[in-house]
Image 1 (cartoon, rainbow, N blue to C red):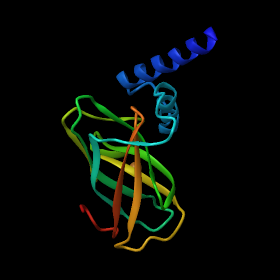
Image 2: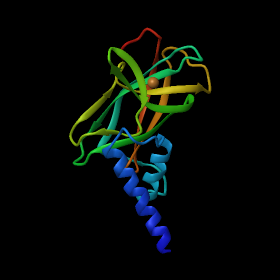
Image 3: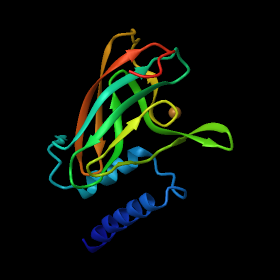
Length: 174
Ligand SMILES: [Cu+2]
């Protein structure tokens, strides 16, 4: 029993240590989400829709495969605590990851963002050239103008939902 408790504490500690230093960890978003489920007892009955964290203006830039499509949206946090997005799903794609486009010495490249924080009382825009959802392995063809469901899971165990509009490859905003 004691070992189990210590194990859980270690998971928490590594999770927090990671959040403080984004350079030294390679934990994928999925493991972060699992950690969140371990520490947030009381949410085991399923998703609890957040009353304070909402997602709006969601759209998808649809690109023909094998090029990944990308999802953009705005997360608003009216709560008193920082919200941390740990995973998301988009119904038409089997593989969804959180990415950040980084400008390094004039070169643009993408990095996996394991957890993205939205400050208390603030908002964060996922947009071209910045944070985005990388959408891979489409499970069905998407027509421009279609609406696709997206689900967002936060470190607290709370969730948010949005409908995302599919836009053509040359779209730059909703
Ligand atoms: Cu990307």
